Length: 162
Image 1: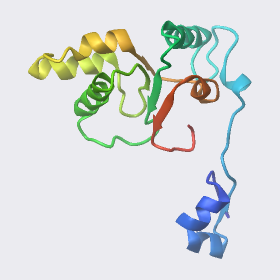
Image 2 (image 1 turned 180 degrees about the vertical axis):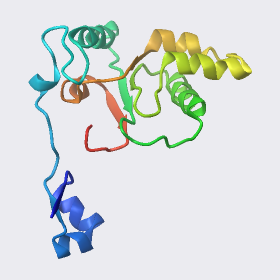
Image 3 (image 1 turned 135 degrees about the vertical axis):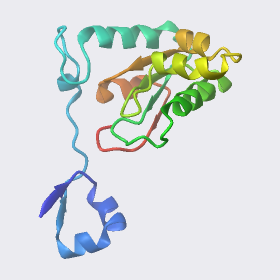
């Protein structure tokens, strides 16, 4: 049988025929330990470098009374063909709820540059760029085991890597 990183209980609900027929072996979550995700040197452990980790910690500590939200869609294929609309949706939601956030670029490639391109089309009357510059950190990689326990809330697509 093939191997799938889905918890057996969830697999029975989502894939009853495959479970019954024994076509897939459901192993449960595959988690790389926190110490394997967080580099001690500048070397990238696949989840960012030591300086990335320091930047994240400084952002988290910037407002000790209000921990940021983590938002990531990771390996999810773009849920919108218009990534500029996606970045506007993310930053508008953060601004409307007065939240700070760490945003994973993911396959959508969310970034400050994309936000600036998106507002250039119709102008930035809501001040989204200024809001994001003060309240959002965009990252290409994050160490989930380290990060998720340090944020107030996690918004993600539920993929096996988060």
